[in-house]
Amino acid sequence: MQVAASMLILSTPLKNLNKSLLLHHNLHNKYHPFLPSFSVILTKPCIYLTPMATISSNSITASDSNPNNNHKGGAFTTIKERVTFQKEIKKSKFIAIAGTISNERSAQAFLTEVRDPKATHNCWAYKVGDQFRSNDDGEPSGTAGKPILSAIESSGIDRVMVVVIRYFGGIKLGTGGLVRAYGGVAADCLRNAPTCLVKSKVPMGLEIPYDLLGVLYHQLQSFRAEDIKQDYDTGKDGVTMVTFKVDFDQMESLEEAIKVSCSRDIVFFKR
Image 1 (cartoon, rainbow, N blue to C red):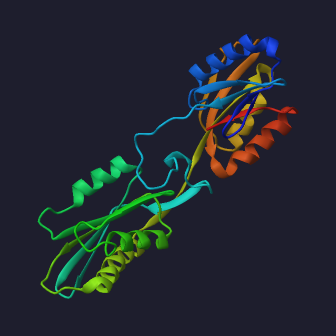
Image 2: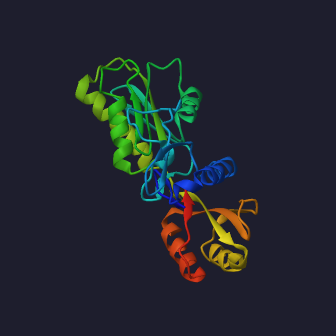
Image 3: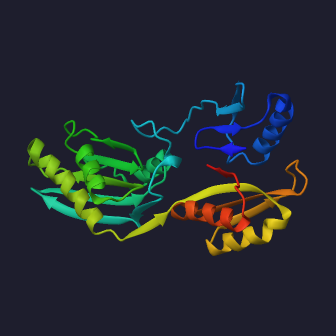
């Protein structure tokens, strides 16, 4: 059995189709985080089980990316705590508030918490991986939300939302002035924010004979794997399923170390 990023391949003769599908059904029910729903395509040499299309109700950007698949480098920089920055520009008071978010729901909650209904404008932008959104809240189109988003992108900070609250002071700033004001206040806010590097954890799993469990657990401890779980009900004699999480940047090294230590080619399940 071999699992790729977007396809599960069972290199199984067609005469063993029923047994293979039963095994897949059991694995899918027990280890759902690793195995999405599959449709079956029959070919002569083997059986290809391809993920069926799913529709997410949590789309938060104009991007089609899945928020769980962001941060291809396996780590991202975000802010440690909520930060506020205030500046007066031509009698208008601008207050920028930055906070960490993880999805659209947390972004909406953050906006609801910090916005001031009495203010002239509550403009905002956020970014979660490749997904982003911005809003001008009544300011001329492109003069508030986009400059805030540009400040976020330039900062290199991810999973963050910045809300800039404006109290109009009687002097119009013009299009260019608004862009500089909103973008500048957002940039200053993020520049003053304490940041931290967050490493993504990758859920993984593998089937392994009982006699190699000691070798496997030694490697898992060496690579500081977390959330290690074991299940003996795999439908195979003398074989158990072990699942765990490991830092993204350690994933390939751990795979290689396990294969070398076990002296065999082991198939890993990954999300």
